[in-house]
Every structure is written in structure tokens, then in C-alpha cells.
Image 1 (cartoon, rainbow, N blue to C red):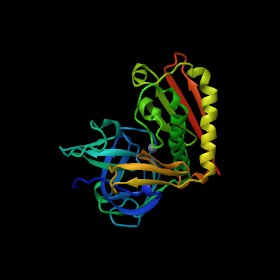
Image 2: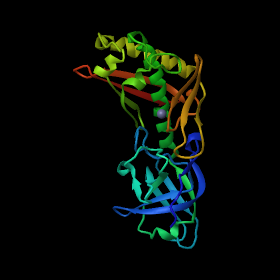
Image 3: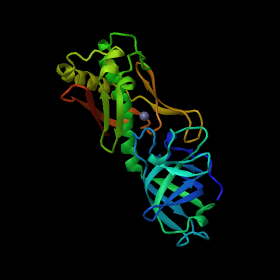
Image 4: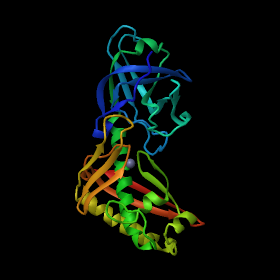
Length: 299
Ligand SMILES: [Zn+2]
């Protein structure tokens, strides 16, 4: 089969289903097939910055020649990022040796299905892709909560900076970006880990008394989050194109102005979808890691 080109994606606009054509299928270990379509509503786990899990759902083939069973519905257990390197070799997820978006690679959303079918006849088949909507909605709530929390935290920590640092959309020193160690969304929360070490101090952050200040910080963050949810601000993703690798930004029209953050994930369409958003903060014993767990409740 010819090598596929970079997958076109509809999840940034909020899509959870759509029809397309299979352009490749790769046999993977344990009887799993990695199916690639021209276009997909599925959000794949990003191998470079694995913050939001891949979507699950189903692929539905119509009764067509060459498809096992002649018309079948395959559950999609996960969706990962795949890549075709300059040498034509296919790599999946953590095995990809370059960062997402490397221009010499083709970048693919790979839908994992369990099937012993011969992959070759699947190529060229029409397929309907359906994302598990309830799971997606939960991940959207966690991811939107993550970005709102980042803005509220930056603001709450602003007076601890002793030197000019890069700022966020609202002009606060961007603690979230400068200290971020890792971010993970799941169905219940977003967990963000920040490194408070030498390099952050060098950049001008003063961690003195942070532990004692945590309850007050959390209270300020949570008050800000409650205010933003009450404002029912609109959320959208701005994209430079339809490709999986296009540059995308989360944009939220908050009362204080338009906030934006680079983002490859999915989000709620407006903050009124959330009933509440609550952050708890904790500091490691040695004071070098701040962990924030932000829990959204949907209305
Ligand atoms: Zn994001």
C-alpha cells in the first residue's frame, strides 16, 4: 500500500463522528490492527507531550467486499500517534524517535482495533468513525479545567517573581509554562506537576514561605475559577490548518480579555458546561515539587 500522508483531524472543532476512507492498516502485536483513515474525529495521544489520553469508540464498516464479516463494527480501544519516517518505516507512539510535527515525517492518528483480518483489503474501504462521547466530554472538562487553572495559578503567584519573566495572556509571569514538569488529564481531573528548583529560582521565582501560603493560594485560585465558570465564557480551538500537526491554540473569551494557550487537545464549548472547578495544591516534603489536582464537575 502507498504510504499515507498526515491525517486530517476534526476533533479540534469538537467533532465526535464522521465518515472517511481507510488509507493504511498496520498489524501490531497481540492481534491488534492500527487503522489509519484520511480524516478522523479521534484525538490521538500525543507521543511528545502525552497530556490528554487518546479517544476510544468504534469503527463501522459497511457491508463491503474484503471486510471481515462483510460489514462490521470494531471497538477502538485507544488512539495513538503514528509516524512514517523519511525511510518509509512506520513507528508508533513512544517508539517514534522525533518530536511530533517533524516536517520530514507523515503524522498519523492510529485507531487500535482487535482484528485478525488481513489488513490489505481494508485499505480503500469507507468507514464511519464514532468517538465515545461521554468519555470525550469528561476529558474535555478536565482539559479546559487544566488551562483555566494555569491562568488562575499564574495570577495567584505573580507577586513572587523578582525578575521579568515571560508572561501569559493576562500579563502574569507564566509560572505554569516555566515550571511545568508534566500534565495529565483523566476522566475525573487534571493533575499538573511543577518543578520548583534552582533553574526556576534563577528565572526569578521566590518560593519562600510557599508551603504556608498554599491554603491561601488555593482559595484565591478557586475563587477565580468560580468567577470564570459563572461568566459562561466561550471556548474554541484556533488551528493553522486541518492536519494533525497543525499549530493549535486554546482560546477562551474571559471577562478580563481573551486568553490563549498552545494546545493539541479537546475542550468544552463554553464554561457553563461546568458546574464547578476545584483545585487542591500540595507541595512535596523537600519543597521542590508543587502538585495541583483540578477537578471539574459537569452540570
Ligand atoms: Zn491543552
